[in-house]
Amino acid sequence: LNTEHLELMHTVTGGPGGQETKYVYAAIGQRNDPDEGLPSPCTPNARSRWVPIANCTGGPTVQTDTQNAFVTLLRFSSDQMNPFLRDIFFFASGTTCNPLDVNTFDFKVNVDGQCWQNVHPDYLNVYVFNYWVDKHPGGPDKIKQFADVNQTFYLTFPSWHSMDR
Image (cartoon, rainbow, N blue to C red; front, top):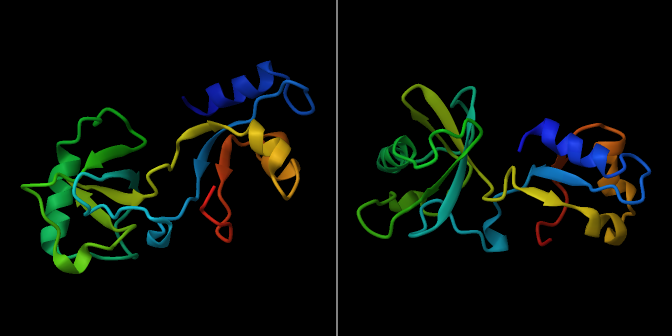
């Protein structure tokens, strides 16, 4: 799915103000919060999500052995044809992180000149948000605004918002 497809779903189901309008968004802005029970990228058998970014400066850093482990995993990822993201699994044996890095999130690695950053495992997942149009405590506009007002089909999770939904 891309933005055109998400917009088309919104339009053909009624668009702004339509009774049957579907609010379908790719979710972004989620935080990797260990307090919410998310496994770190270094957790054996855990899936982590990675997105390409412009450069590898700033943000959390990890030790060289951890960097090397993720370079290898990203380099040989099974979804290399996806230009938007890669999901990788940290194997229970044969790959290790430095003990100093086992609880580190959001770090970046350079793989053959392309920088990849760890993001929330649900980043860019696509959801139908119609349930929340009716149930959001802040009212329906909190969900509808992205498509109806901003004309974007990415729902940006607010940084202050609890991640328990």
